[in-house]
Length: 129
Figure 1 (cartoon, rainbow, N blue to C red):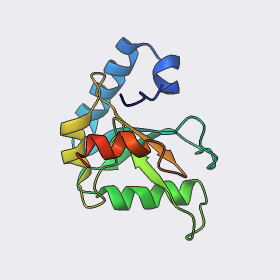
Figure 2: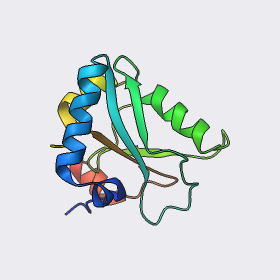
Figure 3: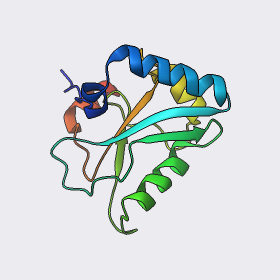
Figure 4: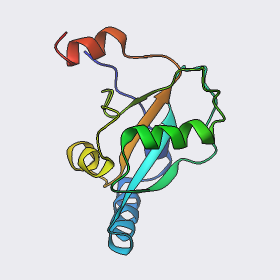
């Protein structure tokens, strides 16, 4: 059974406020994806300086990972893993498609990042390995 990530953003902001904010963002910026980025619990990687992002809908996961790397000042030789609902999304996936498939009920897409593959066996199981 995969571990569910506890979102600090969800704990700090009630559902109705998150839903209203995501809806307002999508109305004002229809070509952008509202994304919450948080460090996976227990990861030894740097904290990110901001959690909320308005991501162009045609950006790929790989391009967004580059943005995250820059924000946390991660050196090129260090690994970073990003997870959406405990799954490692393909780097070629377009953010708009990922949003349609994986967005939360509140209207945000939640991305957790880690310096290690924190879901190990769970991820292999989820991928049918």
